Structures are given as structure tokens and as C-alpha cells.
Amino acid sequence: MIAYKSMMRTSLPIIHDGDHGTDDVTTTLYLLGHPDIFRLLGVTTVQGNVPVSTCTRNALRTLSLVNAHHIPVFEGCATPLSRPRPIGDDAFGDDGLGGADHLPAPLFDAQDQDAVSWMMETLHASNEKITFIVTGPLTNLATLLHRAPDLAHKIDHVVIMGGALNPLATTYERCGNITEFAEFNFYMDPEAADFVVGFKGFNITLLPLDATHHMDVTKARQARALAALPAPINAEIVKLLTAAAHLDQPKFACEGAFHHDTMTGVYLARPDLFEVNEMRIRVVCDDAHRAGQCVPSDDTSRPLVRVITALRDSDVIFDEMIRGIERALSQ
Ligand code: RIB
Ligand code: CA
Image 1 (cartoon, helix red, strand yellow):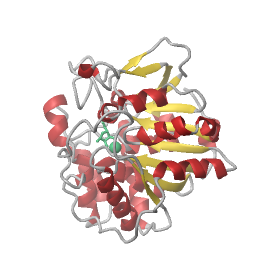
Image 2: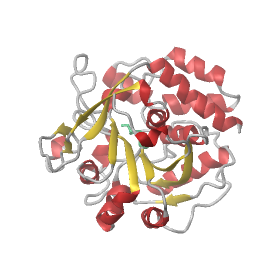
Image 3: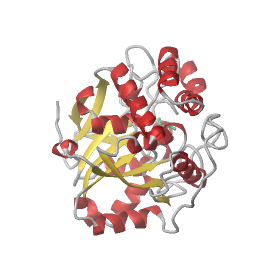
């Protein structure tokens, strides 16, 4: 197994960059539930599950839920790097929360500064390297690296939920969740994804569908979450965890819904729970049919990316996710 020195530090400085819909929300909660491990510097938003202004509102609602007004929120890119926004916003409803209607309205405002310039300023001013957790399209980070490649040395580690190499290949014909070939986050901005996974200068870990499709939020896990979390918000959290059921079940015959984003945080907290392989990858950009597909590359100018290929114990990982969320809700 690959070990990172940085993961052994306490209070890792973190920026969570996401397209705040269902599982981006639980990711932010998870990070807030472990202040001993993560020092969340800010939440930045990007278009993806819903338009970016809705993602920003959801990030503010998430932080308002747990009175985390001290965490600043910065709105990021509204469109992909170099193509129009590819698809509509109806997967998780207009608000992107899949029916979890009882999160509070925002109790504070987003910052005026845009996400990319804040990231640049923060990296520039920091005396320590910063870790990024990216749970949406990679547009913000790619924009930053285009604008200020010299700041890459201030980035320690980028943990990305995205891509699909060949998850559950023996069971299912299809590879992607949004198209037959592509995973949603990479599909929403293939150029950005390809630029970041091809960038040499910091550690990159990818959490693709190959791993997340082994985290089925089954009925038994839903019951465990309901029992572990405080009422009445427990029912809302379970709605967030199962919001993709109507999309995943017809494609992959899972029992509940697959869970993706929160495992980025669990990976940093408990890397021992994941199998990792190193490989070079690229993202297909120039073929409309396969846009966003993630494929192995033998181009040695690309960095070796740590790809999480399997979960060692999905029950322990699930319970750890719920424990982090529970701690955030109880603080
Ligand atoms: O493919 C999974 C990704 O897309 C996750 O980031 C989730 O938020 C979804 O919309
Ligand atoms: Ca997401």
C-alpha cells in the first residue's frame, strides 16, 4: 500500500471544491466532523450537479446546518473550461439535494471574491502545503493551474472523485454512470479533468467509480445511518445518501444507490481502508461519443496518479462516513 507522510499529520489544511448537491454536502459535513484531522480553510463551488449559484447556496445551507459560519464559501466557475455546460440539472431536482428539503436556508452569505482567485491568494500566502478535495468537475483547479502554474508547489495533494476505468467490468457492460463511457464529473469538463490528471507537481489520488461502485447504500446501511444520526435530520441525510437510487438501479442493479464523494475524506483519514494502484491516465476530450472517458496512458510526461481501485471493507468505510457526519451534526 502507498503511504503518504502528509496523511499522518494532524489538522491537514484542506480546501473542499465541489458541485454541492447530495454527496458533496455529506463530504463537507464529514470533513467538519473531524476537526482533529482536517482544518477546512474554505469551501469552493463549481457548476456540476446544478448551476454554480445553486451549488453555492447548498454549501451555505450545509454550513448553516452545523453553525459553521466561520468557514468561508467562494463561488467558482459557472461553465466548463472550453465547452458549454453539457447537460441539464434534473437528476437531483432543482436544488440538487434529491428531496432533502429540510436543510436550513443559508444563515450567511458567500464571499464576494471568486473561488479561483481566493485559492490563488490562499496558496500564495500559505506557509504550508494545502490539500484539495475535489468532488465536482475540475474546472476551478484547472483554471488555477492555467493561470498560476507556479503555485502548484504549494499544493500537497489533490484527491479527486471522478473517472471510471472499468468498474464492475465482470458484471456490467457499461463503464460510466452518465454515459456508457464516462463518469459525471469528468464528463462535465473533460478538458479540465485531463489537464489536472496530467499535471506534474503534486500528489494526485483518484477515487473513480471502480471504487465507489462498491459502496452501495443498501437498506441495511440506510437503517444503520438512521439509527446513528440524530433525528429529525437523520432522515434528510439518508435522502442525500440515496438520492441517486433512481439513476443507479436501472443501470447497475444496485440495492440502494452508490455513494461517491464522502469517501475522498475517508480516504485521507483512513487510507488503510482502500486499495491503491499507481498508473498514468488521460481523459478523452476529442471524441464526442467518449468525452470524459478515463483511460490508462503510457505517456511518461504525465504523472503517476494513485488510483483507488477497491475498498478493503465497505462496511467499515460506511460506518466511518456516518460517524464523521454524526460528529459534525452533534458539535
Ligand atoms: O459520478 C459521481 C459524481 O457525480 C459525484 O461527485 C456526485 O456528486 C455526482 O453528481
Ligand atoms: Ca459531486
